[in-house]
Amino acid sequence: MSQSFKKRKKYLTNYSYTAILGSTKSYLTGFILSLILTIIPFWIVISNTVSRQITIIVVSFMAIIQIFVHLVYFLHINNSAKEYLNLIALVFTALIITIIIIGSLWIMYHLNINMVAC
Image (cartoon, rainbow, N blue to C red; front, side, top):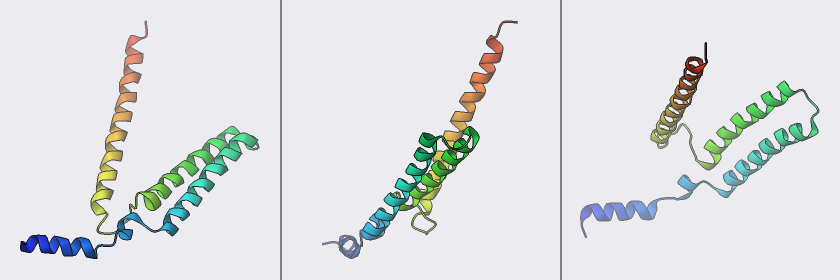
């Protein structure tokens, strides 16, 4: 066997998959947080106890928090050195999606203005 194959084999046998996949406790914590962050806005909308503006603010806030819960507990995105490239890829993807959405809205707005009969 070659020297590089022995190194890779040693690396693979000593590697802990729980470092990548997470533990049952972290998945359960993420699941419970996601469940709570889903039930609260659902209850607020169904019960209709607060005004529409507050409902929109609460649902939006819970959605943003739930995005971060999913990133941390299920996608394992954190600020460690190992996850640095994944974090950069995530930020780049968010940037591209934002540019596409804002650009599309801008184009549709200007098309609407230019197509209106004078």
